[in-house]
Amino acid sequence: MTPEPAPARRMRVREDPAVRRQAILDSAATLFARRGYADTTVRHIADDAEIQSGSLYHYFASKDALLEAVLREFLADLAAATEAIVGADAPPRQRVGDLVRHALGLIAERPAWVLTYQNEFLRLVGQPGFEFVAEQSAAIEAAWVRALTESADAGDFAVDVPVDVRYRLVRDATWTAVRWYRADEAADAAALAEQYLAVFYGTH
Image (cartoon, rainbow, N blue to C red; front, side, top):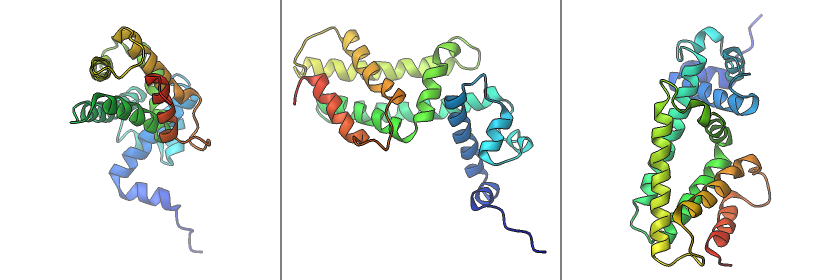
């Protein structure tokens, strides 16, 4: 009797170590967001990624190592995109708009990664091995503050408020959307971003 072939995904993962590693990280982020870090086991992650637990340990030594890898990838990607947007040769208002558009696009595309970062941030501050979380977060915050300050200096905002207040308003309104936004809703991320910006800038 000829054995049935393994599912296509399992074969692709087995043949390509880079794909396997990314599949593990995607599964880890998904489960950390859904179950919480404390209630997620390595076995849960391995099952979701469709590999044996022993194979997972060839890539990551522990659950902490998985969390570190998820956060390093997420923050590195976010920091690079943020710096590219803020450093672009564009009007200040456009740069702020592009930051909001990118954030909401990320929420639509990688909600589990955003949630994992948000859920674990405070717990990890000051924890050995995770110093990069606070450091990169501070750099990203500084880039947003710079963009908002330049937009305010250009007279773009209808109401003048301190930049720290404006930053917290924009940050919290934008990033907490991951708690309720669903990519299959009528308003897509791009349309939602324009609605947010109309509120932030007091335009219609």
